[in-house]
Length: 105
Image (cartoon, rainbow, N blue to C red):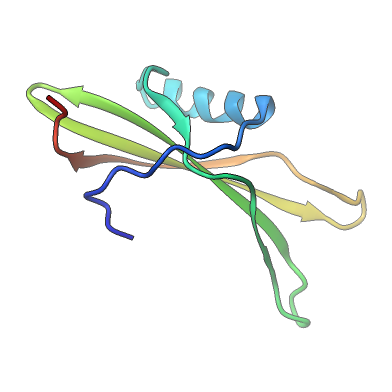
């Protein structure tokens, strides 16, 4: 993926996932303005037969400005499937920040 290009807005929206992403942004001192999901739905991955791990991911983006420069941050939200309870677990949010993008005029 070209990190110099801002991801497009997706159709995904989930209140619990949104809350987890916004909490991560707040912990990293990034405001919630200019926040959107950059996915249309969960991207699901299955492990091998030796490791039957099932995981799903979705991505969110937040744009921001520091001094005269523009940046964005990407939050990767992953959930691991818990076979005994037959449901996905809590959201784990990983943040990549300070990805430069051109400032819009």
